[in-house]
Length: 154
Image (spheres, rainbow, N blue to C red):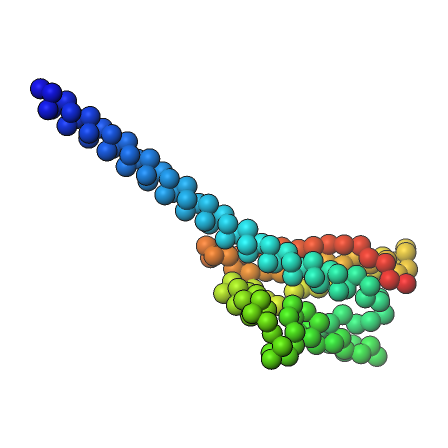
């Protein structure tokens, strides 16, 4: 009788340990997924903040990067030159730059954000600057982040 009770106790303890082990593995997997999403979002937010910083003093009469020439207005500078987060010259890239670009490529994240500038007609020089970046997350879902800032450039 003691041997049967001991065997039952061992089976109960093994079952409890298995359930706890599975729960811990699921929790660990969720933590890794959340960490990956946080890294993706911080990479995209870093790019957006960099663009906001670059364009906050961008004069309203200057054409935005990537805009085509329109009736008497010149075309904007190439978007790649203005928005690439690393050096243009490949030979000057550091290991950090290469890792940064590799992460962006893996996420299919564009280095060319969407830039929208909306002037405020009642306040000359004041404009709304909106910068957004889209990418495909590690789980395959489409993700997007955007930053909006009011800037003044007389």
